[in-house]
Length: 201
Figure 1 (cartoon, rainbow, N blue to C red):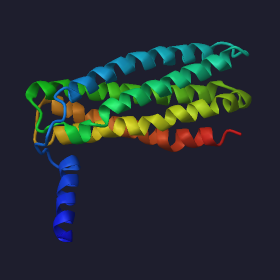
Figure 2 (figure 1 turned 120 degrees about the vertical axis):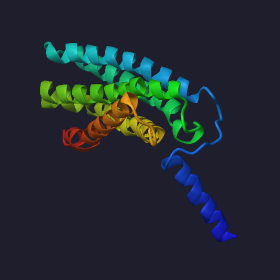
Figure 3 (figure 1 turned 45 degrees about the vertical axis):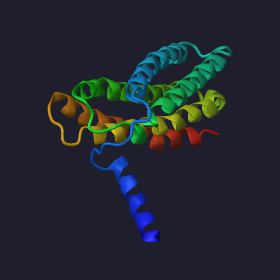
């Protein structure tokens, strides 16, 4: 009985991270909802990034730091919100995808990459553009944003990677390249960029 239970558990895990397997779809709109949420979040994050960029690249005064902190909190909240839409992709979306769904993957993964890249560029801008004293004031919010990236991009890259197994064509190539780039960005955020903020004292 124990062996049977373990075997079923292994098969279940394999269906999530292995080759495409048809699984029960708890909601047929999971993928379309995730795609829409990622698109909306990319626009919202872009807006906040522009605000921070403008503040950092001008004279940083007493009013700028609270505004930067507020925008960082907004970015963290936005990414945390969209993450709730993408997590179910890994276990609740039936594979293989229909062709139309596959065609939507480049834009979807592209938005994930774009959000991660926004976070990376903003973090680097803050590190380079603020004084040590100002960095200390925004440290908590910056680390909050950085911590949201991996939980957001990982379900998307795992899902997209599984979805393109056994497929070919332009969409497959774009998705594969974008996944790799997104993972590289997330790695830099989780590694040296987070470490740089942690060291701020």
